[in-house]
Every structure is written in C-alpha cells, then in structure tokens.
Length: 260
Image 1 (cartoon, rainbow, N blue to C red):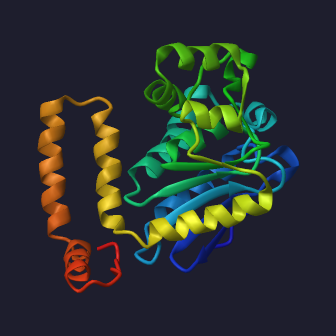
Image 2: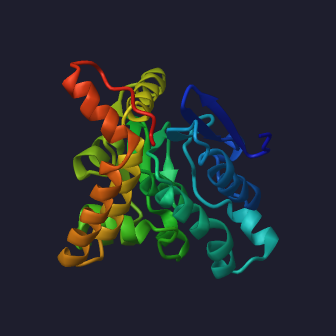
C-alpha cells in the first residue's frame, strides 16, 4: 500500500516497515500513527507475512511525538493516546508473529515505547534510548512504564523515567533493553535481515502463543499461567508446524514450517 509517512516492503515472508519522516527524526504525527495502525491491521496480518521489522529512515529510529504537530492539532493528551498510540501498541503486542525493532538511531519518548513493544531489538552502537517525557514535564506513556518496570525493575525504571538520561546502545544491552548491538548501519541492516529470516523460518504459530504467554505472565498468577500454558500447548500440539517438526526429526531432515 502507498503511505505518506511510512514505507512498507515485503521481502520473502518478512514485512519491513520504515518510519519515513527523516527531516524531523521520524517524529510521530497523526498521519504516521494511523498509517502504522493500518499497516499492522492490514499488512502484518497477511498469511504470507511471518515476521515484521520496524526501523527508521535517515539518522533516527524515532524521536517521539512531533510537538509542533500536536500543538497545531490541539488534541488532548488522552485523546491522542486513546486514538493513536495505545491502539498501535496493542496491535504490535497482540500480533501473533515476531516483531523486530531495528534501532538505526535515537529512540526517544513514544519512539522508545514503540521499540519496547516489539519482541526483539537490535541497535547500532551509535543509537541512544531516552525517556524524554520528564524533560517537558510529562510522564511516560504508550506502554513505556509497563515495559521498563518489567525489564529493569522499579529502581532503574524510575531513574530513567525521572532523569531523562540517555542510555547508550551498549548500556541498553547490559540492562536487557536491547538484544543485540552492532557496529555500523550496514551491519545493522544485514543482521536485522538475518534475524528476521531466522524468525520467519521458525514455527511462528508457536511464537504467537509464546508472546501471549509472556505478556500475560507479567500480571497473572501461577495457577492462571499454568492453565494458559496447558491451553496453548494443546493448540500448538494440534498445529501443522508441530506435525512437521516431529516428521522432520524422525526423517532426520530440516523442518519446513508454515506458521500454521
């Protein structure tokens, strides 16, 4: 589909989504958030898409909300979150497929929230992660407080949210905020494609169930999760991917999963 603020391209079974407002470091405006929602609702759900990659054009991943655009539109904060950001975060986390954030530069504010909502994060070593909300007197939103607490614990999450300090890619990996750090933009593209293709070749039906389990384990009891594990294992055990995995093992060959 043709968009104005994002680019989409499907290579094999991977959907690449590029935030495309490089002149403002890919800051969110109304159009970008709604186009991202559309891409996740209509393109990412396609049966021939097995993995999704989000990255940014130019020097940044995403610098957060475009404050000029927000002021010009005169939306309330709650309206912006209810209509634009929160539905997007829910679409990403609810997508039963792996989503990779390829951080080619700064991820700040809602841009960091977008990365945190993804399942796997790869960053170029020059990238920085910043919870900038406090610098303009705001609180983290778009799921940042949820993910930071789960990943970092209270003390470090509070520090990042209340200080607005930059976190380097190296520090982010040490903290568990990113999975992998690479040395250059060219290597970032190469490693991102390799990782996306590796995920896409796996039994992505099971990956979707894993996403659901881990998300709910953050707030449900052990008894509830044990029950959900049993339910999802039953679904996985009845999948074509499981049958293919067993057949490949017995036949001593590499499995060809379809995500079904």
